[in-house]
Length: 299
Image (cartoon, rainbow, N blue to C red):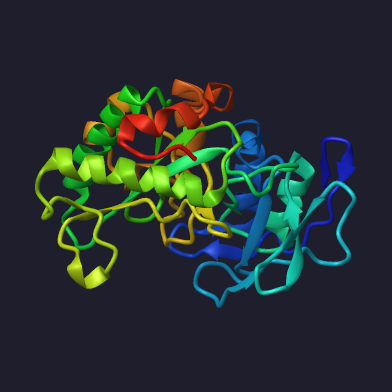
């Protein structure tokens, strides 16, 4: 198929990827290409971690960090070295043709690093991941998200919420890529602890690191670490209902239900309300002057 200026080889478009919804691989590609203008700002320049489902959500899957040796020239590369001494070359998905190509490989989800070339050691967003530790905690997730917004607003950050597409909710704040992963994580930890303090009940919100110690929703700051990835905005998740990690307007958060956002509903939503993340990456601020506001020594 032709995507922009490129011819993209595509196989088995009629293969069923989501049996419960009778959605095919071709439906998945169509979804991503229809929303490419919304998706690509969250992908460009980032190391892309491939999680491949060659036979759809009911089949086996595997992880692949290294981009296949034979890949089109419209797919970028990001060489990365690890403390172990190993290295690899990640794919970089910066255009619609590359997006179609990686979905053709069975990548239902779009997993990316929190960094971009050329500064792949310096995160360009801070993430708080609200992760329920038990069933029935979604109302608490929504309440805590509003507290996270309050704290981020006071710090002069620009918070952007989205459903994770699984069980939780992500809140991203774009930052200037100038601090290391440990410094960003240290800031995120202090921010999460302030949220926990304001909520005031560890049965509702907790930063306890040991799973056994958690009762409430985990205010997770640990995703701000090297080689950790998240499903980016508009990413489909490998759920039976083809759920999507959906960007939200803040006015929706108090009543949002994550099952409302799927491959079958997102086009109409974007046509109706637009892209809540539009202009997000122009809102990046420096974290450096904000450490003191959380009682932290400077980076």
